[in-house]
View 1 (cartoon, rainbow, N blue to C red):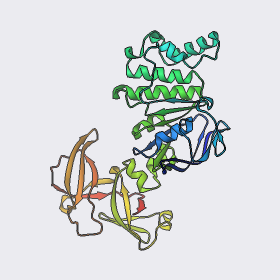
View 2: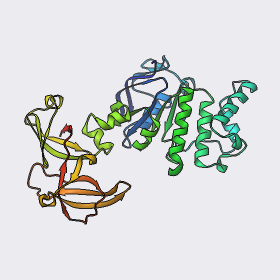
View 3: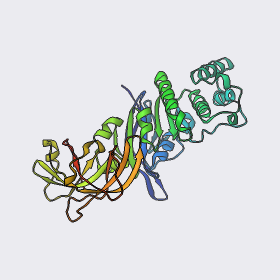
Length: 352
């Protein structure tokens, strides 16, 4: 499938500080990418640079095979065939829904304008609201208008900056599924910024995890969550707890005993280094209380049952842990001592 977006060695500086640093990214036509990362990592700057609202210090950007940015070439935002939807939707309050959608269509004749507007009103279920103003609409309806206005110009690439953050939680999932289906129907390539990894699983085909102006990992959301390529990625996505461990030959020594390592994992390890292991809650279980090895330091309640933070009883060992996350339907009390063990599985080990 053809690459719709190609970014090579993109660097953006602000007051001599790198906001984006030699960033590379490729997106195929029709793909939807969820961009996640801590505040200040460069997500919005990346969108603005792709759209043409921010200038780059170095690098190249190609959109639909056309060079829009290079050291000696810059295409203005209005000529990039890129649509952008902001967090606050930026609707014109003095215009009706229909007039908002028509705003960027002045170069078309009236017949073509009306055809596009009618089609988008129908697609986005706005026909009954075309004469209303922004203040008369719900958050979800305003979002649909913002998307319709952007799609009216038929962009090659759609950029969305935290598009669902202002939507009521009860409506957010339905709206995401609805908009995803629309983008797939129109074969529109999209990138959206979010702080919520659950939104990525609902809305996106791919996930890119960013930190300090670079992409740490780009893959399907499922692949990244099953096989994060670094502790930094796993930690940001809150995939589990990290505990100290020792690599001894083909075995991994933990507070709960030994686990067998795959040949590939062993090959990547070196003697004398220190490691940590990612433990997902599903790989923990409670066992015989005569072998207690942890105490409860925090109790929360979730839809999965009680959520406990555990700490080693014996902290005078290199394998002691300070914050192990456990879900259970059993009710414990603060400082209660429990016995927990690791279920045998292929461990994810990172160099510390």
